[in-house]
Image (cartoon, rainbow, N blue to C red; front, side):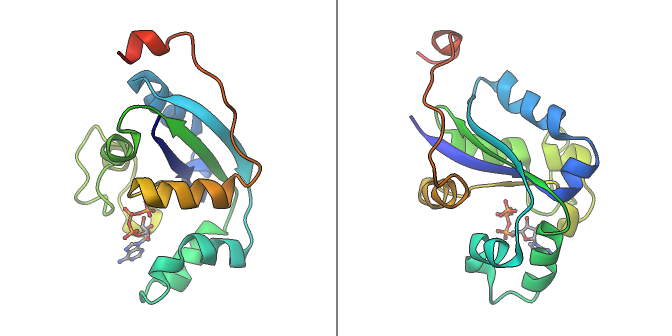
Length: 148
Ligand SMILES: Nc1ncnc2c1ncn2[C@@H]1O[C@H](COP(=O)(O)OP(=O)(O)OP(=O)(O)O)[C@@H](O)[C@H]1O
């Protein structure tokens, strides 16, 4: 089944939003496959955001990601990549709808609380980068109540 990589950024961890965010993914019906609190070094953050290396905000973005611990997660479920992005909301919190994580908890694009893979291919790469030892293979006993 489809998997996505979700990261609660340092502002989300510092602001005590970890439980709220995990709860939103759990209540939707997705399954947690991997979870860790981790501080990453600059080269690792640069690797994660390598596609954005030519952007003018790249250095600021890397500084932000290494400014404190992040929560790295793998979530699994039907269409979890696209649906995860909808749960997260638009990149710029000024455009994120109320009810989304960024719409409810963020005001600045440079402090937008959470990251989610933007495609199945990016998810595969990001999961391999953040969880090189693999994830936990299990099935929730609620699975058949959320998936046909
Ligand atoms: N103009 C900007 N100024 C400052 N930071 C920005 C800007 N644009 C994007 N960012 C930061 O870079 C991150 C990655 O940008 P991207 O365009 O990939 O958006 P995204 O895919 O919605 O975000 P993410 O990859 O974090 O899920 C954004 O989440 C935001 O934290």
